[in-house]
Length: 346
Image (cartoon, rainbow, N blue to C red; front, side):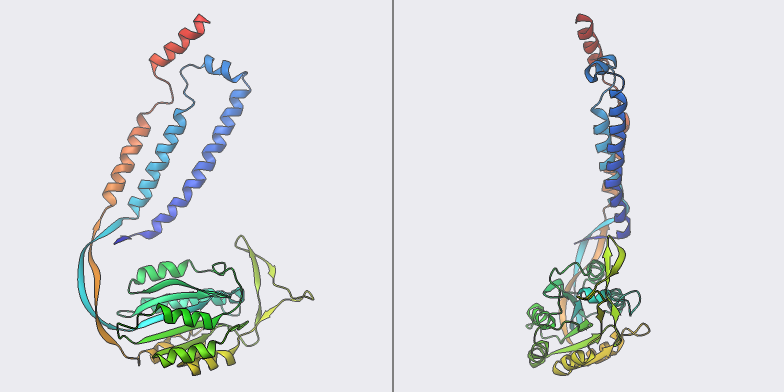
């Protein structure tokens, strides 16, 4: 198993496209400067020692060295020793609404980010339970299968946004059904779902899906995000808010929390309904209910010892930088003399 001890350093890889654009810009400027001196072929003959291809080679070596340097700084680690341990826990599946209405700002900074922050805190407090994540709007998708890898869970959680599901809507029933398919009912552990939604544009029979889940021993809990008064749904372009969604008469569409639907689903699923606020995410109350479900001791294999591999990447980076340093922008003397001889012969 591969992991990074300092995964935040990988953000440095975003600088590579910037380096490429800058290099292309400088290369274009140099090309235009040479063009002002006269015919391109004549200029090359006037500068027989100058190589026009080696700068590209040096740049490629620099980029590769930078790539290995950043990966090395992130400290890749490989699991070297796997141990079998016994855990006593349950399987939790988070069903997170990612429809556009979750961008409404009646919770700070908006409904979706507030929910993600609460889920991150929940993951931090887990010890032996497995967790999975399903995202849904008009359709439902498994974002993370049930796992005890809490680091991976938080990594996947950070990538969730409203653009993940192209079809708009709130298909809670489909999400519940997909959650049931994602559980392993052969391991005998207790199972629960936590639906986090504003309940807008309810499309399918979520109540019936919740009844089916509870008949199989899975409790379905609901956390309502938003306010009864509602809030407009913002529109973003390249990360910047440009306005709000408007109805057919040009007025802002107001998204309101559908508490009645949430309570009905929770009642049918044998779980709890809690309304989230800025002061209380509601997950604590729901987890108190989930603590009551059956937990079974099961065997689990996990990596306990990890070996650092940063030395390999830093070594390769240093070697590439050394090669780049000793490559001259000038051609070899033999090649230059040959070119000069050809010019004199002409």
